Image: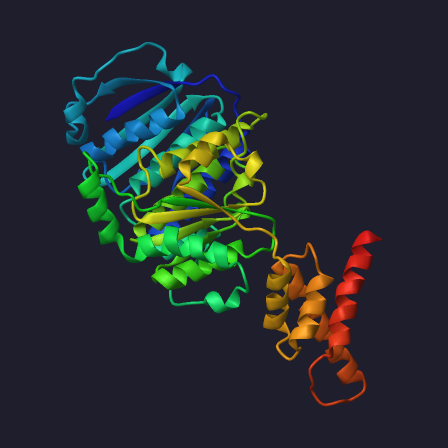
Length: 423
C-alpha cells in the first residue's frame, strides 16, 4: 500500500456536489471503457472517503499517478509503502513519515491479488481541485482501456468529418488570393511531407519538422473560414474534427481544460487529422486583461499542446477567430501563419450570388453585388434562401408550377435587409 498526503488549503465544496461529480466521472469512464465501475463516496465519522476500483496498479502507473497528483496539488508527501506490495517496491527509497496526516487529504494505492483500488480520505469535505485530482487518477488508471477516438470526440461534443466528405473549391466564389495562400502553406506540405522533410535535413544542423502545426484563420463572421477547413480536409484526405466552444466549456472548475486536453489526445489517436477550433478567442483571451483561472488553464493546455511538452505530432490545428486582437500574444506566436479572410469584394459578391441564383444573367448579378456592399458570403446565402422561400409561398398560394424566382425578388430581399438593419 502506498500512502500520499496532500496539503491543500483551498475552499471545500458541499458533499452533494462531490458526489455528483464522482458519479458522473465514473459513468463517463465506464461508458468510455465499456467496463462496469462502481466507485464509492461517503461521509463517515467526520471524514470524506472515496474508493475507486482500478484494473491494475503497476509500478509505472503509480509513478504516473504521482505526476497526476502533482498537476493538481502543489504540496504532496509520500508517507509509507508496505514491503509486501510489489507495485511500489521500486519507490521504497522515497519514504517520508509525518504526523497527523488525517488533517490533510490522503490518497492510498492498495491491492490484494486482483482487487486493486485508489482510496481518498480527508477530514471534512474535499476542495474542487482535490475532486479533480481523484477524477484524473481514475481516468489515468483506465486510460489504457480506450475506445474508438471518434467515439471519444463525439462524446466531447466535437463533430468528425471524413476526408472524403463535403465540398470542393468550386463552392467558394472568389477569394483567389486566400485560396493560393492556403494551397501553398497548408495543402502542399500536408500532401508532400517528404519534400519538406528532405529540405529541412539539408538546411538545418538539427533536424526539425517544418510542416505547419497550427494556422490561424481570422476575419469577420460568415466569410468561409469553417467551409475552407472542410475543403482542406477533403483535399488532403484526412478527417476534420470541428470543435465548437460550447463542447469545451464546463461549469465545473478544471473540467474545461480537461475537456480540451482529451480532445487533443483523441485527435492524436486518429493518426492524422485537422483539429478546427472555432471562436478560439472565447477560449483563450489575453493575459493582459483580467483572466479567470479556468481560462488560464485552457490557455495553458493550448500553449503546451501547440509547442511544448506533449505537443501534437499527428494533428494540424486550425483556429478561427473574428477578434484576433483579443487573443493572448503567446498563443498568437504559436501559430505558424495567420491567414486573413476579408469581406467579399464586388466581383466576389456577384460570384456568390451566381452560386445561389444560377439562372440570373451577368448584369443582374452585378446589380445585386453593387447593392450588397459589406455583406458576407453567409449573409448572401441566407438572403437567397429567403428569396426562394418567398417565391415558394407565392407558387403555393396561386397553385402555380415550380419556377425560378425572378431578379426583382432577389433585389427587393437585399434592399429590405438593409432597410431592416438601419431601422
